[in-house]
Length: 230
Figure 1: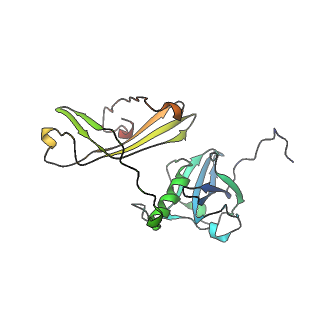
Figure 2 (figure 1 turned 45 degrees about the horizontal axis):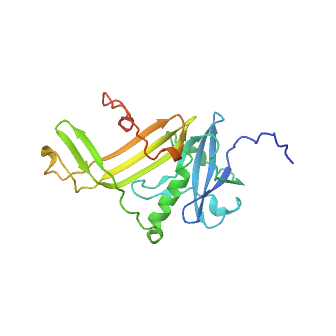
Figure 3 (figure 1 turned 135 degrees about the horizontal axis):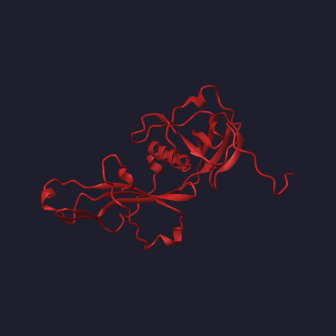
């Protein structure tokens, strides 16, 4: 038996984890490559089931290809750092097959990618399992323009958070209802509706203190800056 203070081994290529999904299902992700001891190339398996699987199950060896929305068959893979979050269940080692570690993914992601993508693909392939849409959120989407304010109801509003170094990034995706409450004169006949994606970096995140909190971020000064951080 390991001693209580003995450190767990580092993650290696082949390590696999069961990922709990909404609806009582499980997905699987596995490490394909380790870079600089901390960065990991991880991919989802194409398997989804109702129970935590055995790592020896051959069905876990194929990489999930995403066809939902605009993914066009890309592998469900991303580079991430550090260990998986709580809730990811270690199931053992699935040996990496030749060529799997050559999947090209240049950007860095978060471990939650491997929970979100297989669930989105499952709902895309099984629309009968999609849960009923929640009621449209109350509130207002307000654009403060040079010639007045435009006011819209929300068509959809989603917020989630993911670990970002010592802190967290709070991410918002908002779409406005095309039926505007109030438009400016120059846009009255266009019938368009805005949407926004905004990421806010926080030194720490306490979800219980988010309600009623106002977050303010500065605008960008040029087109070269990241508009998602504006």
